[in-house]
Length: 114
Image (cartoon, rainbow, N blue to C red; front, side, top):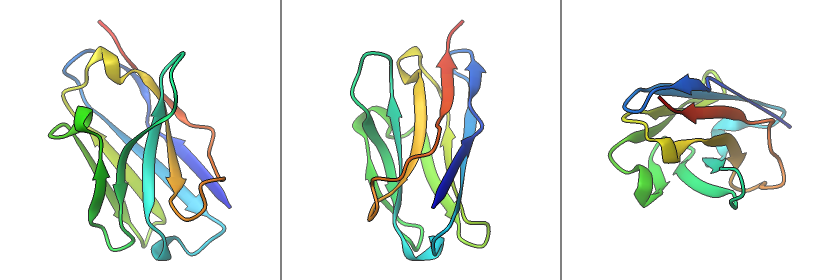
């Protein structure tokens, strides 16, 4: 199993980023997926989750209305579109397999700063 996140970077407050997570080593279309994040000195937290058929099943209150999770089962990829970014969104973002939470990628750093 491999999860490879990308798309992070430095962005000003109010900006947008689109994160991608390419999965391999398992039948991607058969599993619910989630995005998590971990800010410095804080616990890793759930950002959003998506069912295997593409329905949003979890969403942190702090990102509602700003972030959208989606997936393309043909590309084995889950996305996180992040709009109206705030400094408190600064964190390393990870994707995860709901039924196999022991697998983590290297994450992608998102820094929101002016």
